[in-house]
Image 1: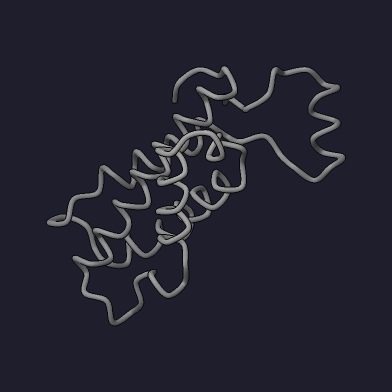
Image 2 (image 1 turned 90 degrees about the vertical axis):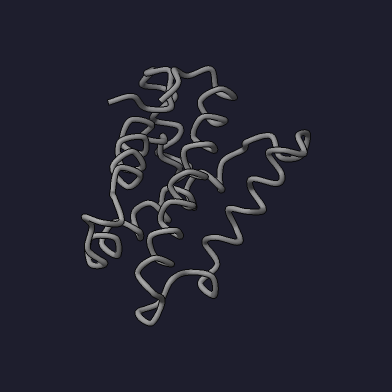
Length: 128
């Protein structure tokens, strides 16, 4: 498992002390890859609904990281889009058509992967 840490025990202890945990790069990459592999014609709404909260959680976690939005207009736009996607008013409900839930899941997974790539590049980590 690749973690966003240099692997030094001291650094991990400091992270744990301030309440932040390292980002599980491989876990996020794997979850978003699985979400993007879902096909509309062979996936049930229940399967989509079961995976969506985890992917939204990954997106939310990455939005809390320093991604350089202050200095980069493109990153700032991605972060803005991320906050729009995770807003409860924009999430699918039980009355949302299945296709809408499918598109939402794909949008969240794609944006999460883009932000994960920015995160790994910014921190000098291997690409997911």
